[in-house]
Length: 342
Image 1 (cartoon, helix red, strand yellow):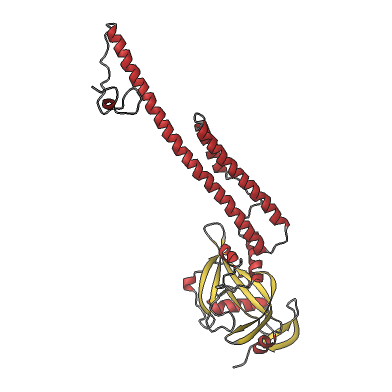
Image 2: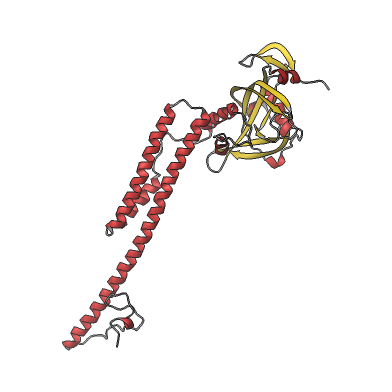
């Protein structure tokens, strides 16, 4: 079997006119080209998922690790896009056209690492493409020599996996991931310029405060909780401005953005929890106030009936109070245990 040959390239990925075999390229660490395809889709949370392949156990590098959707070497004389299309077909059974792929950039990969007891020297310029057509993973035809399985991952989870300590289940090259995150931020994700208190929370808070004016201590708790929410959002915005001003990779920037967004979300949840407790207390107090009002009215009716009787004024019989009814004096006890005692 004739061994694959690659174009030797310069640091920008341009062929020098020389070729080298696959074995020599990885034994000597000679620079060559690869094509990487990332398959992406929108998810129900307004973010993005990426399809990763789990490399076959017999691969000469990073066996059994989750990697780019599809990737492979660019053979001598081939163009990057035709290699990307070939790898999609061979590894996943996806038949694509050049117009289905979006080129998003290149990045270098260089490392020396031992696999299967043998030194592996990689030195490549990777050409990266996005494929975002619908993909049903149950209908893919996997090349078992290369790919053990495929799985959708949320882009947030992959970025977090590269936070220290790095998740060893993944071998996705950070240069490629950084390009993909940049593409998704520009084209797929709803990234905010600043954080704000959600409009529905503002409306609910204002409406709730109006109902609490007769109970100042409950209103004070709601005001304190809302002030804490405002403070948290303000602090997150200040941190966000600092993050945007610093020189971060797309992955680092996105991870910090996600963390701030989560802080804002948690602050909203904490306010809603405190508001719920206060509304329950308000409801209980209003019920108690209503019961007392009813008792006062009932007692007043009894007294009016008694005075009219003393004056000899004809009137309808007083409302009968049964032993187990609440006592009209407002004590909260049953009538038979209070004013109705014999």
